[in-house]
Length: 390
Image (cartoon, rainbow, N blue to C red; front, side, top):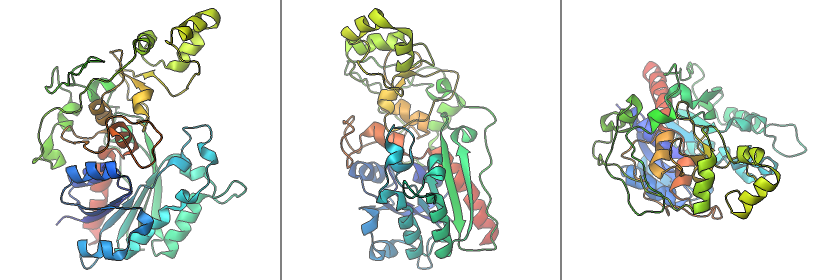
């Protein structure tokens, strides 16, 4: 029997994809951004997706789609912007989004959920409720879990590389249950060495910037990881096509291509600013090879023999291919996140300026998602808890 699941703040479906591979049956998903809803529905057509601000979702929208005796698991990966350390000012944001965990608890109560899994960036553990307060957001979360009847919980920070994801992403989790006598166990690492960028991008042919030639055929030697990304039976996605998609060239200015050519693996725009000083830098800036302003997280050339840094919603600007002078394709970013190759990012435009809070292009959807292989590890672990206690 498959255990059941409600997916709050579902994004394009990273958690659902991993849980589905682990045997879960997702009944309801809730997502505010339309492009994510479209991608989610295209890949998980069996799920009832509610396109709404979660604060407006009612029990009448949920109860008809879940078992009469309640749901087994609610996952809640609330937006992490207010907890992120990515920007200079982001940590100073204090708004109602930092309390959206309450919606995950509310949905769990509506659905009579046995367990809740919260997910966010590790920086949430040091974020206070207000600038002049010493009370931590996570302490409020734990207190409100107890008040809602979910006082049996464990928290952990997991490294994605420990679970076969080829990026050094860390995420904070709390797993809680309303059964005080259940023993909560946490996922144990499944990999003793990192999956590298080279292994992640295996079989993905090069694309030539500024052309319109999308590559649709695999090429080159497979890796164990690339075979897993194409293994539809593992992902329980046999009905989806096994063809290469989103290996599409991007547009780059000639000056940008020259900038990329200056980068060695492991170097970024910051290194170029450090290397080129005075008149030499001014010349490169006049030729627009270097921008006027230095961005620390920009144009990092990946190291082929290491895992990638964290894939974010800005991954198009942040990463340069380890071998070729270009940014990564959508499929290459999806590989770094561990989305299977059959995953179809139909929602939203290919690229859009980061000015719209209600639109996410394909890169943003991928960067904001939970890596499916990390979600799979949780699915296997939570299956074991249910099997032992139900």
